[in-house]
Every structure is written in structure tokens, then in C-alpha cells.
Amino acid sequence: MVDSHAAEFDSFVRHRSPALLRAAYLLTGDQHLAEDLVQSALARTHRSWRRLHDSGNAEAYTRKVMYHLQVAWWRRGKVAEVLPGELPERGRGGDHSGSSALKLSLRAALLKLSDKQRAVLVLRFFEDRTEAEAAEVLGVAVGTVKSQTAKALARLRVIAPELSDLHAVNGAAR
Amino acid sequence: MNAPMDNLRSGLADLADDVNPADLRDRALRTSRRIGLRRTALTSALSVVLLGSVGVAAVAMTGGGGGQVVPGASASVTVAPPSPSAPPARPAVTGDHYFHRAVGTTKLELFVLRERYSCGTPDPGKCDPVTSTENLRTITHPADDACPENSVTVSPDGRQVAWVVTADDPSSLSGDLMIADVQGGAVQKRGTNVLCLGTRSLVWTPDSTRLYVSKLGNEATVGAVDAATGKFSPMEHDAWKEAETLATGPFRGTVHDGRLTVTKADGTAPRSVAYRSEHDTDVVVMAVSQDGRLATVSVGGSDPTRQLDVADVIDMTTGGPVEFPVGKVTRLWFQADGSMVVAVGGERGKLYRLDPDRQVVAEITVDRAELKNRLPFQVVLG
Image (cartoon, rainbow over all chains, first blue to last red; front, side, top):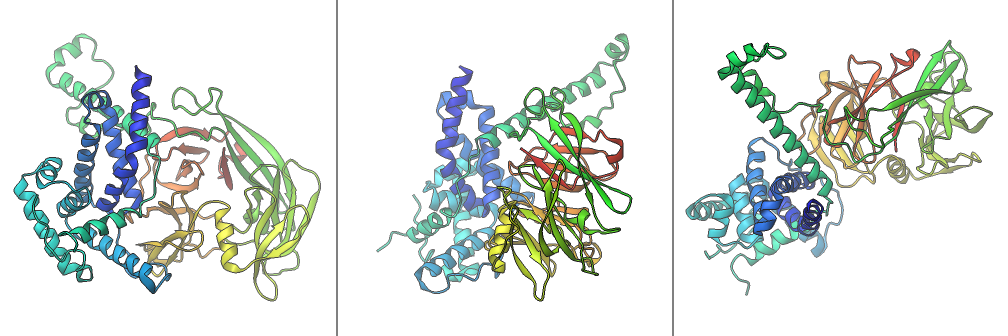
């Protein structure tokens, strides 16, 4: 039975880590910190694996832990440093470099948002969660998700006007 | 026409594509175990506090146990590194620690301290290392020649050793490249005008067949020397730097103008954090971990030698110095499996093997009296 649980956890990690890492990367802006975040969330999932697996809530629990840890880490100052102007002088010109520049701008802009603002954006527009679902993951009221989303989008317009194409229209609530 | 916020959705999805896949299974299990240990320690500490506050009579009746219980002091007993039951590193099980010792002014004796585990893998308190030190060959050199000591390097397969002896260079910056069997026997001259200064003057290729070197001639030249024939193949500087870096790890680093920068071996993907050395002295990056996350910075590096102590180990994701449970680290050797070997200030004669989370998995005691005050010049786990 123990071996069976271990194999199930291994399988869970193998199959869900890529998706968890993608969200964690948006939350932290850094490969290593993203790995740390997912690793920490998975470790807590492992502590409660039998209960979570039996109830089918493992992934939901892991994501919830990840978002909560991210908030805690941010408060401790564990964030990636933004490195404007220190990127490789490569690939200037053309659509590809334009897309890369946009990505870098988006990454830098996300890191300038507050922890909750970034979390609601990732939940709403990357994970495609409803406001109610995002509120449940973050453990806040739906009204908080609405207000944080609005503030995040407004702040993006100020700090990253070059991203206007990305956030030109306010998202309709679902 | 796009739906509202579709552009932001696709922008986030594109950005998320930048993350690289990682196998987090072992790391998650290690952290899980540590959380378990921490909870156990916390529970024990709380039990002790409860005993101390409500069970004084009971303690007195049983003879008081073993020492005073101070309520409140237990608040700091949540983590106890090094933990005797900390999980082992994904084990590079054996270890070879190479030392040298000057004898008089013309000889350098080489030794290897071998670290082995009878039960297969390090496990603090349960499976301690069995160490033995062997004499290797003795290098003979011109009187007061500093080149051999600064350049001597054992090949990755542990069979050959290379060093530089100054020949006709009065500045003692360069000399003849010598290669020999590490156990003894004849010495072969395999190059001339090879620089011997810096933190890594000779770097073996992973297959132990060639050495990356810099040569001092009419103009500086870099390239690779074939260890068997001595044939020197010049290389373009950037290609040489990349290859020389990759021989020991995927990343390299520099400190310049108050910034510590780590890049991939080819110089791309720079990550930079603010770094000022004490008194703004010149320093060098001595090593970067295999994942590029940690960089060791030397103390003032105006002396171009590899015998520099580590001033700081910097976490490149936060820019902050890394704390070690064993104390202030003065030397650090990163290993390919993410583990590391460190020496601690004021603790001569002892080395610590740490897992990738910097927890102690083994203490290695230098067992030869003549080496007690020396540090290894090279550490190879494998």
C-alpha cells in the first residue's frame, strides 16, 4: 500500500509539475524560484498525500498552497530581480524579437505588481478561473478579486504602456 | 476580433513557455521529510515546555532528567541543522580530496584523502565516512617556484596530474606544462609558456585527454593541449572560454562595477545582482553551482592565486548571501550532483559534505597530522 501511494505521488508529480511550473513562473518571474515554489507546494501535498489522493483534491490543494506560499515569499522579499538593460544583445529586429521584447516587458511589469494583484491576474487570465474560483484559491472574497483585478490592470497600463495591446480592454466578469 | 483580454491571456501563456521543465520529485520528497522532522522537533520542544511549566514535580520525582528546561528557549528549536537524520544527498557516494604539502623549497608532496561508505551512502549518525589518506607522487621544482602549487590539477579520472614549473620566465607567471601519472613515475613535458596564475590555470577536459591552458608568448594565446602528445591547438577566445567553463560546469561569473553577474558558459543569459566587496577590493567569482543559482566570491583577489578564501556565497535569485548551518564557509567545491563540500573558518582538519539544500550529510576529518592545517586543492565526488 505504501509503495502504491509512492507510485501515485510520483505519477502526480511527473504529470502535473509542468503545468504547476508554468503558473509558478508567472508568479515569481524566475526559473529557480518557480522550482522552489512548486517543490515546496508538492512537499506539503506529499505530507497529506493519502488524504488528498483519496478525496481527489491533490491538484487543487497543491495550487492553493502554491499561491499562498507565493504571497508569504513575497513578504519575505524572495523575488526575482528585474534586470532591465542587461539582456543579451541578440536578435534585434523582426517579429521574433518584438515578441521577445513584449515577453520581457510583461515579465518585468508583473514583478512590479503586488503579490495579490499578480496572483489574481495569473488565476483569471492564465488559469482562466472565474472570479469565484480565484477567490476560493486565494481565500479571499469575490469582491477582493474584482478590485485587485481592476487595480492590477490599471497599474499595468501605467507601468507598462508598451503592453497596451495586451490589456486594452477590461475583462468581463464571469 | 479577439475576445476581451485574449491578448493578455496569450501574452501570459507565451511568457509561461519560458520556464524549463524540472524533475522535482526528489526535491519535493526531501522537503517533505524536512517538514516532518521540523514538526517532530517542534512537537518535542512544545512537550518539553509543557513539562517544564506544569510538570515540575514530576521532573523532580524522576531525578530531573538531564538538564534544565527553560520555557521560552524552545521557540528557537524548530530547526536543528545539522540534523542527525537529515535526508542524504542524491548520493555521489565516494569522494577524493586532493591535498599538497610543500617540503623544503623544491618539493611538493601530493596526497589524496579517500572518503568511502561501507553501507553505501552517507547517513549522518548511522553511516559515517570511512577515510584513508594515501601518498601520491612528489613534484620536484625549482627553488621557491610558486607555479606548481598554484597550478597542480588531477585529471577527472584520477590517473594523471598536471602542473606548471617556471622555466625561463623571470616573472614566474608561466612555465613548462608537466604531466605525469598521479602515483609516480616519469614526468613528461607537454608545453611551454603556459600561464600558471589565476584561480584555474589548468583545466582538464572531462574525458581526461586534454587541458585548457593560456599561453604567454609574443601575444597571449588560449587553446587546448593534448595530454598524450603535447600538441597545442589554439582556440578563438570566446570558444575557449565556453569550453573551459563547460569542463567543470554550465555557468561562469564575474564581478565588475559593483555587479555580480552569472552567465551561461557561452556568455548568454546574464543574471546580475548588486555586489560590493568589503573595502571595494578587486574580487573574483571562484565558482558557480551547476544550476547557476549560487556563486562564490573570493576575498580580495589582487593576489592572482587559487588559494583564496570565499568571502561570500551569493544566491543569484535574491542577491543575498547564503547562510550555512555549519558556519562561515571559507572554501566551497560545487559538485555535479548539486551537493557541495565546504570548509569552515576556524575548523581546520574538517570538511563537510552538504546536500543540495545545504544540510550536512557527512563530516570528513582529515586523518593525517601533516595535512591538518591544510585545505584540499581539489575535491571530486563521484
